[in-house]
Length: 359
Image (cartoon, rainbow, N blue to C red; front, side, top):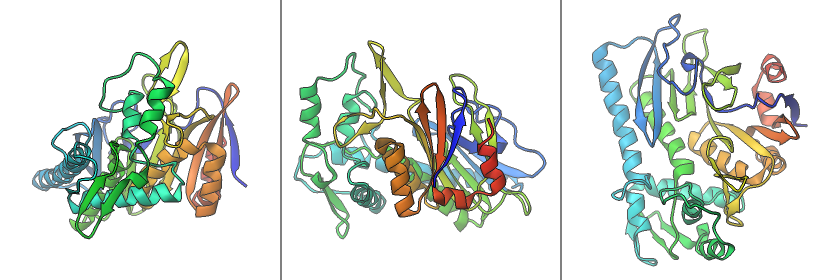
């Protein structure tokens, strides 16, 4: 049975980031843990931060070479999948005439296929073709509306979406839109970037590393022989963040999605940034946050979005059926309730689980 925990209103589990970076998630530049040598490179990409940490202390020349390689990987993902730059490969697809094939890089095709597969597996809860609806509700590149879209406008855009309206030809590395839909890969591209940077580090011989892009992270190996990489569970609130609990994370990735960072209000009604592809409207269930643990950050990233659409009960049913490690936080009156899937219970030690039960 899923484990349940009642948390006080101010203590909702939120974005998970490396312990060595804690001291406020709004400032990723805090000093490293000096007890164990770690080399870190960092910067900005996709409208957020990135931090790449490798165990041990590298000479400055090797550090700069590593950083240049990391920037190259991130730039390639941005060039391929950004919706905020008109010259990206994805925007070439979005601006094409419906029915016309568009040649795309193999990496973009691979992500489109992964997204299509997950759309099937989640029965439409995850769908990258809802970009037009995301834009309509103000959470995409288009300008923020001053009022809630009319039902007729929502229905008109809803008719255009659906992963079945995007055809992919992997043998020829091309795709085409069958309707005037807008493909938005923001719910999977960041995870793809995390996986690619991790693969780069492995290729360069950095087996022990941690990659963190905007809070989506992946750990490989350990920080030191007897020291695992550790993540902090934040106290979510406006302003500086601080860790509530500390958990180890080894050879695993993590992605978190929630309704508490990106939303807008109209006439006192709060609208979540999570749009349900099945009805074209923001979700209204009680799920506040979901964290997914998976070897692939691309899969974790996409699943976290799908689970925010599903809600707590449907998420845990899916997680139980598909053996996915998940932690969900739900609104419950004036408190929060935490539940974890059986797969996550098996992953964590009794001590770690007990820490999650601490108010």
